Each structure stands twice: as C-alpha cells, then as structure tokens.
Figure: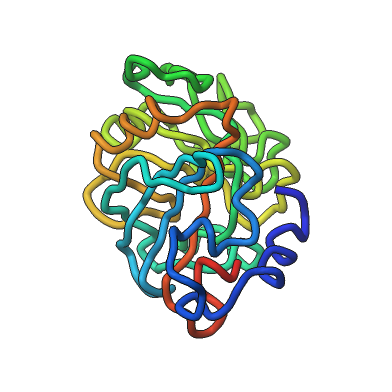
Length: 232
C-alpha cells in the first residue's frame, strides 16, 4: 500500500478494540481495503506465533465470515510493517493487497485469481543489492545471489499454493523485507509469512475474487501497546 497509509489507518481506527460495539472484526477497522472481500490474520499478541485467519465477504452493509482456520506467524512474532527489518523472522502487521497467487501444484478448481506456476527456474529475490529485490524472477539474475533468494520449487509443501502479500512490494525499501506470502503450513512457525493448513489455503484460493479486491489485514487482538488489529 502507499507510504504512510498504514500510519494514517492506525490513527483513524477505534480503540480499544473491546470498547467497540459487538460485531464482526471488519466493522471495527477504519480501512478494509475498499473491496468486498477481506482476510484477517489475528494473533493474541506480538510475541505469538499462532492465531487465526478468517476470510470475509461484504454482503450489503454486513461483513460475513466465509471461513476460518488456525494460522502460524513468524518465529519471532509480529512487528509493525513500517518498523520491520529483514531477516528477523517477524510477520509485518498492516493492511496489504494481494497481487497474485502462485503454486507448485495446479490451481484449485474454481480459482479466479491470476495464478503463476512455479517452475524449476523460479526464484524470489531477497538480495538488497539487486534490481529484482522483492520480485519473482525467472531465471535468477546475476545481481541476485542464490544465498539471498528463495528457490521457490524447493518449498514443495509450503508453496504448493500461495498468495503474494503486498508488503514492501510496490515501492520496496531495502532492508525491510521480501518474500512475504500467505501459504501452506510447513513444520512450524514461519520466517515472517502467514501460513494455514493446506485445505484452508485451497479454500481461500477458490473463494478469492480479484474483482472484489481482497486485502490481507495482519494484527493482534491485544489492545495494549498499540498492537490491536483494529489499531493499525
């Protein structure tokens, strides 16, 4: 999202969360991305590595949950997206667009999102010195060191199906982080992504409608210390 948008949203949202009238979480957020679909990824607090992902549809004036699943976050918890540092194994909080889907496996039947197949030469560059920083590349360019890139096909379980999260994507800030996805669970906490069980990831991809402009909102349910989801 554009620079400063998360900070503006933070200033505008209701607080504390539990003082708000009962209702769906999206109703307590100042910014849901402007579309009629939303995914929320909520951890109990910034030190947590697990929580819940819920996907929502806007129906008239109401937000209705279409599904939910247990979620995993970074091994070192969550941190505000504009303060995140690369290599810290933290998940960035904020509201992000979802540019496209990808996967090693074929897209689930009914997938409407643009879906990019992972090939043997598919890489995600995380090299701060590369012109391809925080971008998919095929093949890996010479200025992107293999040690500073993810060879996507090597993550057969996690990247069977995934969505690119627009964190630090449109105007990448070097050193903030690259390669943040919503993907299938691995063996434990992530390196900064949000992950869900395989069946949930497939359900999200068959549900997501690009015309509905879905966004991913990542945050916490803890109202202390400015970390609550409704206080981006």
